[in-house]
Image 1 (cartoon, one colour):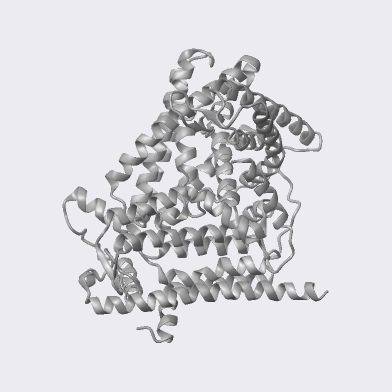
Image 2 (spheres, helix red, strand yellow):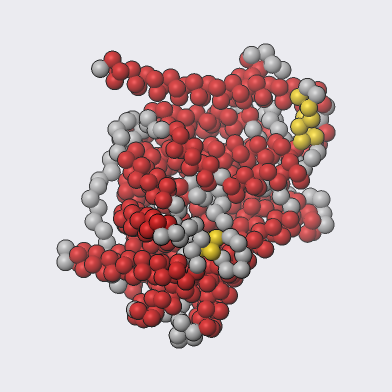
Length: 338
Length: 265
């Protein structure tokens, strides 16, 4: 479920960086106020544990496939929401930076999708109320499965919202959703079972560890969602003159109008002019740019653009590759001549 | 993460200790340049292809000057590709409106979008991986703290990286032991839970020992800054050149200009 940069627009990416950054700041402040320095190495080690545990797959009961632990819900049960959110964020950072699992611009989105929902929604609102005092009891297992499913489905929904709002991928909203949500259902069940299994084992040997995570952060869910909605809405409407195609499509479908009336403020006019300048360049302008009228441009001009674009594009890549090779060879020569 | 990934983590560590011009750059400059690069690549309208190609210079030069090996990078890119590939692949199926002709072939809008997504994927992922191979996780953590990120976040990143190297080895040995006993790729849940639970408890014990070791050396919750960052003139030049290059590539379609130079119209 990690989003790559290739699907996120700068507007959506920045908005979610803001939301996740704010949540991280809030979590750090809560942790500092708690004043428990032993949390620091524990967060580091448990983050590494989640990574390591993901190396070993288990068979998902009932299906023929295998899965691995996600870890968001487990970390929240063990560490409490604030420390868990920070730990999940750090795990996602390493995954993105070192393993390219998730993008850089998309990091804010991924931290929100995979950290906010387990720590601040699934755990306080589903797991804690349902699980009861004994982590080994059947209701605790059911609570873990329910919480994991809800957390993952909300995350999948969030991925859809972010992709459609970005407009880079031109997928129809409904198709994408109908594809994402069912896939994450068995994944959620597997995650819940794996989490419950580990918690039950640890609780039977070291019960104190599990009660350490008994803090809950119900209020954070509402604050986080409200902040996300406000920031995303604000940033997206700020970029309204470069409205992504997907959002236009989704809005047109839902409001029944072909076009949204553009607010005529100085900012929008200036951004509109800037975009016009860019759109005048000979590149593929499909839908939604200011030059909507040029949609059915003369085929001959299209072909001209295509050929020079193809030739130029291929040449540019060749130049880039050749330059890189030349630098490499130049660097090697002194060593070879010894 | 797989066992191959764990060795990948160690190789990023080793690569980040090389000494080249890009390795010597301040991590803040590298982080800002790479973030700006990703934002610029993603700011192009949907379906852009030729306009993006000049931006290939940034990762290409990082890799060349940094003496980074290409094959592991490409392998990691392939491993990370499935979701983006799937989304890209959906487009030719969904959007068949023809938008261009090249000789006898009609190219549909769906193909343009798919290619654009793939190109963006390659550009952004290669840039991030190359930049990380030049900076390394530890220096990045220090750089982030220098940029104003909360100390606890930077410390957590650093600690996670450190213990990942340790626990990764343990988990690899565990996975190998399981495989040697015929465990295969899909353990029964109960067996898996036992392994994971024991790994977890060993991790918690380790965390305890680490905490006492740190406390006995005066740790009170904040990691000391052992590395000082120096933003040199070369870093400013690096940032400036990158910014100018990205802006030029964004403002003009340099690829088409080059194509026009060869006479193609």
